[in-house]
Image (tube, rainbow, N blue to C red):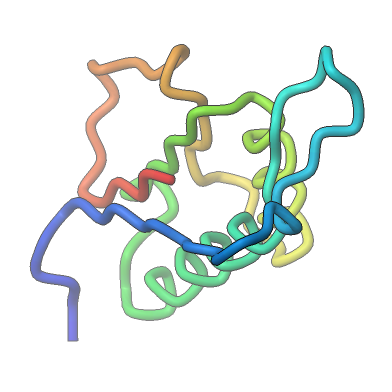
Length: 101
């Protein structure tokens, strides 16, 4: 079964705590390991359902999250999914599936 809509928005809520969000230094961008792991596993699942890596784009607001996402995808052996920050997103790059976090 394929996904019927080409765009997903995920909002991961945590009540009363920012424990998922990390920021090592004031000059560094924010990242969220729980969110990165979830998105990497979701993309992996989509690929198992028949989607190609070049059909999936992952957009995030923070450059720190881009770095963490790339690492999570590498751990799963996926190196060809387009992962970028919203600021660097190329509108001309068309994908069938956008995962925006």
